[in-house]
Image (cartoon, rainbow, N blue to C red; front, top):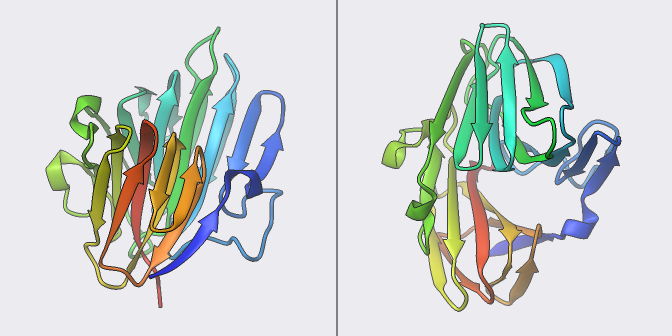
Length: 237
């Protein structure tokens, strides 16, 4: 197994007042040549947006953009006419494809919204823009993996135009879970949303991550109640 630890404290950080954002990979004004992504995974931003504030209309192209709310509610609008609210338990994907313009605002006038925004390069360029959103039963990830994004809509998940899988798990203290790879040339980016875990000899805590290569399966043990996001991704070797 080959592994690289990404500590929470080593992420890029931008605090604009209305936006408090941590970047696992180079993004906007944060540039680190050693952190330009992990295979097809290019962006993982951990965002908190103040009440009533948000991102104005802006364009994207040729990117699969996944949004996972952690608390609060996020208001989405785009130039296809979509107007949606996503909140904790929901997962949203937007295929930017040939081009899309969208905005994202905190749907609340009183509370912040916290969410992950994740960018994955698609299998091919020039896709038709699209939007999809699914509400998942969070009880379905108790001490097990719940697939929320996949290329084949595994377990009722959202389709992504890439050989990538996103899985969430809520792992109880002293419980263990295994992750088995779908593709032999894929890597696994394991992100600790909350809690503390052990992966092999490595101890990870809240917002730490580990990028794993050259492995068929991996065992994970929670040393306290933990919430995990696993992103399996092509490595482009």
